[in-house]
Image 1 (cartoon, one colour):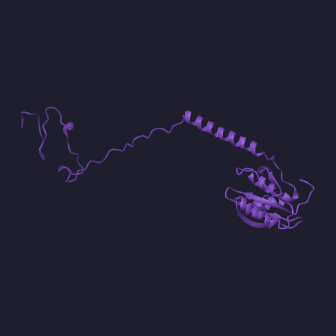
Image 2 (cartoon, helix red, strand yellow):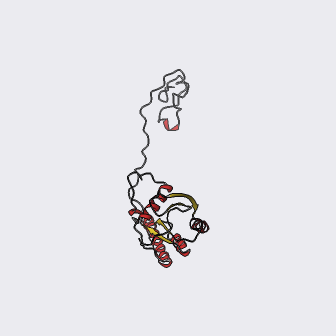
Image 3 (cartoon, one colour):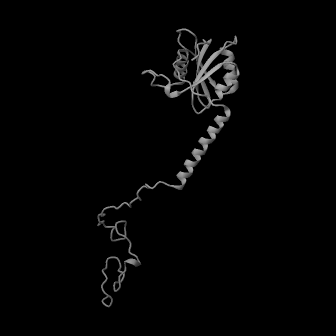
Length: 208
């Protein structure tokens, strides 16, 4: 942290579609919540003009993440100061278990003013493009390897459900071909046995 004291310290909780903003003035006063703005270039420039109407230099900070380093380049182009901090090294208290955009932005503004955040190196646009290309290639190689080697542990085949013996239906409709008696077919006929009529028992041929 530089010995130069900025007019205010701004904490940004950056997301893909929005940016939560909190500002900490020099001194011991608590950070002030400034609301949420869209993650867009015009909205960010409008925020800078609103927080610094007199042109005083502000110091911004936000945590490194998947949104890249475009925000810090946009802020430094307007003449203000911006640092990107390591998210895993930000000090958090025991009561900061519940994370919200407002709490994160307020914490960043407060800790940025006290100088307790750890900045990371910001790559130039060419290095960042090469880094994104390398990560995309690694992701594609991982997908290719996964497609070539399917998982060996397959789920066991489903076993048919075997039901127990069913009770024989002895009701009056059983002999009449009701639901309790299965209809006989050609597969049920045996050599030397003829098909019987209801109520009769057939014997060997030649004795009918």
